Amino acid sequence: MTTLPTPMNLTSFALALVASGAMLGLAAGPAEAATETLTFHSSELATPAGRAQLETRVRYAAERVCGRGGVDWRNLREQADYRACVAQATAKAREDVAALRSETMLAAR
Image 1 (cartoon, rainbow, N blue to C red):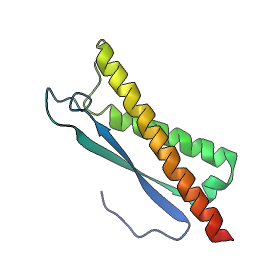
Image 2: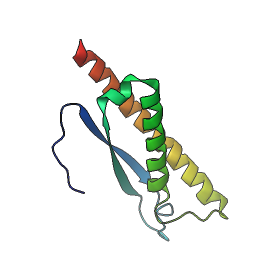
Image 3: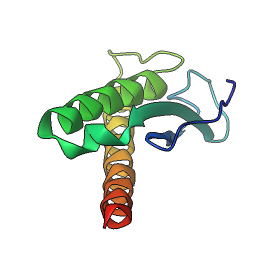
Image 4: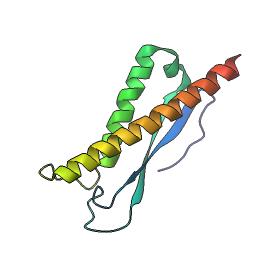
C-alpha cells in the first residue's frame, strides 16, 4: 500500500489485529499481525451520522481482516476465534477513534 501525504483534515489509522495462525488459514504457526488502514475526514467525527458510518466501516474492515484465509463455519472454535477477533479489533478501533476525537476537540480550542 502506498502512503500519500494527507491534508490536515484527513486522518488515517491502522486497524491492527493479531489473529492466530488458524484464523489466517494456516494449519499451524505463530500468531501473525494483519492490518487495514481506514482513512476518514475529521469532520466525520463531529456528527452522530458520521460516527455511525465510520463504525460500520470499522466493523467491515475487522471482518475482512479477521476472516483472511477463510473461516470454517462448521468449526465452533474457528467461529469463536473469528468473533473474538472482530470484537477485539472494533473495540481497539473505537478507542483509537475516541482518542483522535479528543485530540481534535482540544486542538480546536
